Image 1: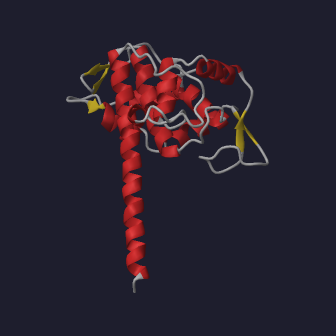
Image 2: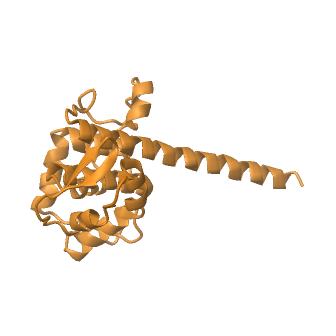
Image 3: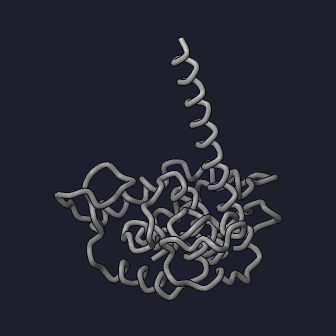
Amino acid sequence: MTTPRDLLIVAMDGESGRPADRGSLSLALAGAEVIDLLGVRAVELDGDRIVPGGGPSLEDPLLREAESALTHQKPYESVEDWLWRRGRDLSSAYLTAFETEGGLTRQRRRLVSFRAGDVALVDSPARRGAVDRWESHEPVLVALATAAGLYGEPLGEAAEDSTDTTDAPDAPDGPDITDDAVATVLAAVNDAVMELEAVRQRRSIEDAAFDNIWRGF
């Protein structure tokens, strides 16, 4: 299994405490792909630029797709740009892959908030492995889930308000990330999710102001 697949399982299992937001989850999945590509030396970071490497052949089809989508010309692509480009509807792509591979089953009631249709995860070694990784508070998975809003507040907001623990499961004070490249990716994911939320809030305010104008006529 891969980190993006584990993250999706955590999001679908509903044990992390919050429903998944499809946009935030897609950004986190794109970051998880970079982290896994770093792990097999398929890429390396030059500052915040993703430089394709010469790692071994990848077994996971979605990671292969991610690798083939990399920018292979200088100055290469920044992690931030990759998240926005690759992350577009990426949660749907992973859900489709799960369903095609038999990892999902249709249910009569809605179990997944970010997908049209009533689907649930089937019991499998992959699912149990992801749950074990989550329950052991594996740092990278916790950080990605946190950034996606599945686990407490996004990292930046949590730092500003460390007293708010509403509905948050027991966990260490923060993930212990020792790899600088991985930390760079996680920071970019967190920033992108916060930017997405800021855009949504701004649009909501603008829409409300527009409605108020029309009410005055």
